[in-house]
Image (tube, rainbow, N blue to C red; front, side, top):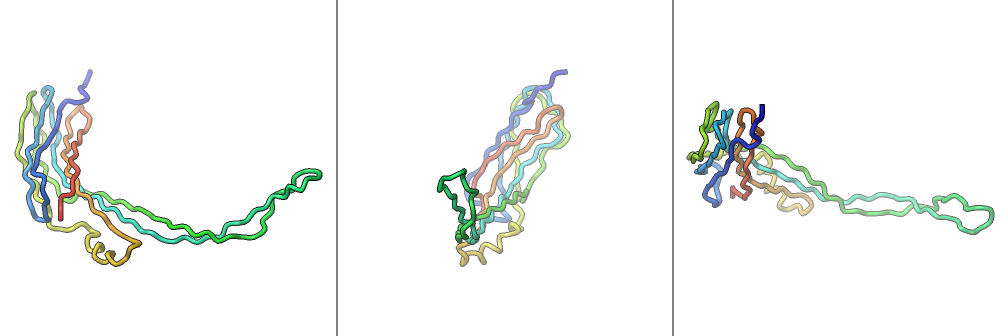
Amino acid sequence: MVYKLRPLQLAFEFEDWPYHLGDTIDLIVDLDPSGDVAVREVRVGLECQQRYWESSTLTMEVPIITHDLTGGEGVAPPRQTGTDTVVKQVTREHKETFVHSSVLFLKDEKLRAGPRAMSVKLEIEQVPPPHASEVRELIKDPDRWWSFRWILVAMVNVVRGLPRRRVAAWAVLE
């Protein structure tokens, strides 16, 4: 049996302005099945990508190697004549991504071919990201910092089809 790889197209629209914890995002989700399709679920989620950078200075001793090329019956093996101190600035990055808020608005449905627009309300939870409190503490430390990126994601899971994901990236919360 042959299955369609893209049995359903997905798009969404929303007002692109700053939102706050506790706000509601009003969306219009456009679903366009290319034929009759069984949908397991369709949801919209607000993902938070937390990134943490930490700079530090790394000091290490490296050997000083000399090669004796005086001639004669061959080349003498290299030998260590001392060490040198090398200082490097190292920055480490850590990333965490999680779904902060989501809404499931279609589950176990059969859709007919043709476009349809659905109105969806995504309520942003009032709980701040796990590391939000650390941002204020790190303002005085130039060697460490956090950044937060909010992404609105619509996902659809259909029977006998590849999971589809449509992303709109933007800085949502202030």
